[in-house]
Length: 199
Image (cartoon, rainbow, N blue to C red; front, side):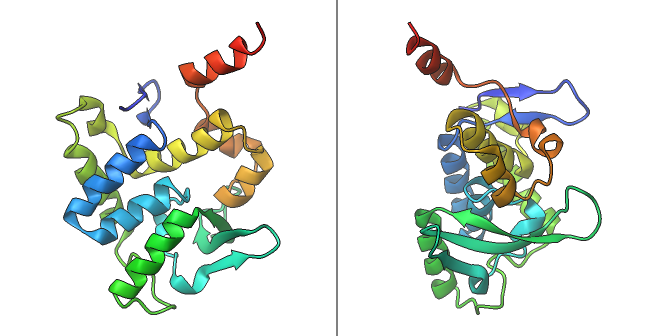
């Protein structure tokens, strides 16, 4: 279930339960088309912006021997401003397998993007999938593509305590100020685990 909504600013921010809400949304997107599910996974499990989804290609997927993990090369927003930057984003093994299966099934060449549609289409796909879930929770009507990235970042930073520097590297943030808006209060479970361990 969607954790909370912050509508205090000019943009509504939805805090999703990770990974359950991301998985639910990916499943709903798959009902329309597998490509839509791939887009949701790239945003919600790899942490890409909608604009970065377009740059993810089979040729950019590689195994990092030194770190013992899969990564994908993407181009995206430069949080310092200016030209887009290229970075390597961590890819969970389950997502890597699905990307491989998708590329094989859809006959996607190494140089072609997994998702070859406009940014507006990617954002619309998320809105449509979320809209289909509003019967179970009306807060889904506020979910945007960026909420997937926000859920991914918050889960790793707040709930799993992944180093901020690691998240900045794989998420494409150039400063602490750029990453701070992705944080929210920890879950009740996290609060309980942390404080109960002290008493």
